[in-house]
Image 1 (tube, rainbow, N blue to C red):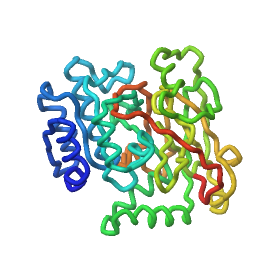
Image 2 (image 1 turned 90 degrees about the vertical axis):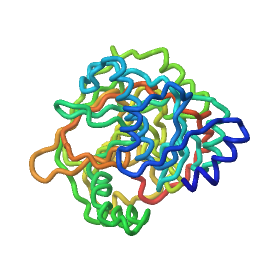
Image 3 (image 1 turned 135 degrees about the vertical axis):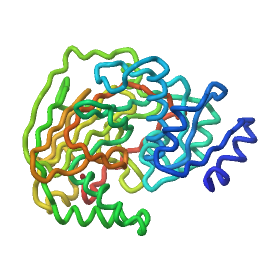
Image 4 (image 1 turned 180 degrees about the vertical axis):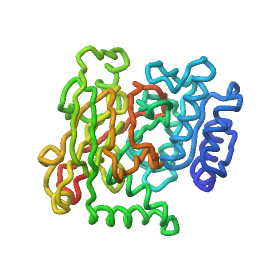
Length: 342
């Protein structure tokens, strides 16, 4: 509420934008509100918060649209309906990677102005299923292994604030645990296109018109993984300007899969190397993927910062399912090497 009062309230008033404010007080309250309440009198919906808050927003809107159209969201073969109203994202969390990738910054004033100007773009979402049900849709990353462990164990240290992620991340990096599993990837080619996603992106524009899947085929890999990440966006943030998947696009209908094989701690800390130079890392551009963990002591999934305990999942990209207030990001690539490339 403080962020809205400080950065949004006056600007919306000057622009003549009428705003109705609701303050959430529990987990999934935003999702439940959007599913059940009448939104006919609203032109858009916006939220102030981190990636978890944004996730609640679009999960609620998509489930709402499924119910309105009589579509079963638990059926992976169904075409999910696109929510009719655009959404605005005003950052107010710890990393705010979704806002950063959309706007190129986590400045709340910039985000408010994007809503006022009214320019929009299409954002892919990824629907995640277990054997029977839709578990969740995500916009940033679904990650198993290292990032899943960090999300799960950092919850014990909420009293530390945002520093809990640094603490848990360092502990899990030193422990260097690997997980056996099998991943099947529905892909049209192995290598990802090394072109930035910027405002007026031609790759994303072409994806609106072309949903061709005929050239895709399933490829399966087994092994011991330090981390498996399905990045729907680059997952860049102020701490990691390149992100997990530097060339991932906002609306190309594909997810960038990053498979990090279990290796030494020293390899994970290598400097002055891009992901393409690391022999224990493979990247794929995919439209779907399935993962099955071996029995034993499995990890957890980190889904937009929320822990998912189901280990065996299937994920499918939904091309530009959301309409977002944003002009896109103008990126200036920094080619300097950084510590901890993954």
